[in-house]
Length: 239
Ligand code: GLP
Image 1 (cartoon, rainbow, N blue to C red):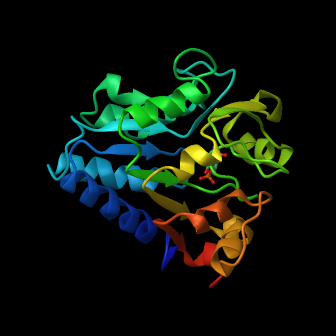
Image 2 (cartoon, rainbow, N blue to C red):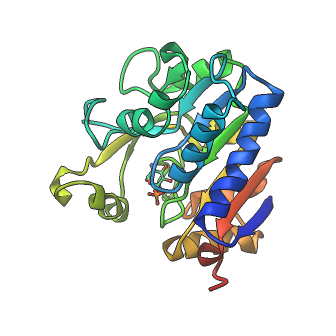
């Protein structure tokens, strides 16, 4: 695991952005795994700017998002479809048919999503944020972690964390579809980002670097052959 501690959020976003830009320049038909949440917003802004400056081109890129709430229509302001559209997809030349999200039913549900990723050649770089409890995507801590894409019940702590984006706690979906731990681990490179004090516990378990635990899913990334953790000083516990 390569760990980079940045001064602040902007530096974290820039460092991550540079990695994605280099990947897209080296392989214009890259398969990218995207994450939502407040953490990668700065990274997406970096990519939009790089696109506007003509440094990157999305016309041959394929994307797979990590997860989506169950029960929100794609045009709901808090759906991850909407988030990606707002923060990246509507601002770059990524073809609509190149965008993929895990679905509740149909071809892109469950193991069908894993197969679609495999058929596309596998994910070159998977971007990931971390939940306060160490979850990645919506793979919540627990006795068992699902290997494949599928449905997950969200833990009360995650519902609580995400409530800030909704009008009330009652509106927050309690279930989601998400890549499984195996789906995530099969990406050729993991790019994990974390900023702010709330992520300190989860980040410290990764920085200790000597164990994995299903109770802190992000620790599984320690076994990945090419994983990078980019954090700010607050998440690293430096201040
Ligand atoms: C949700 C998402 C995760 C994300 C996490 C952290 O649970 N499913 O992919 O990493 O939120 O969000 P934030 O970046 O807003 O802290």
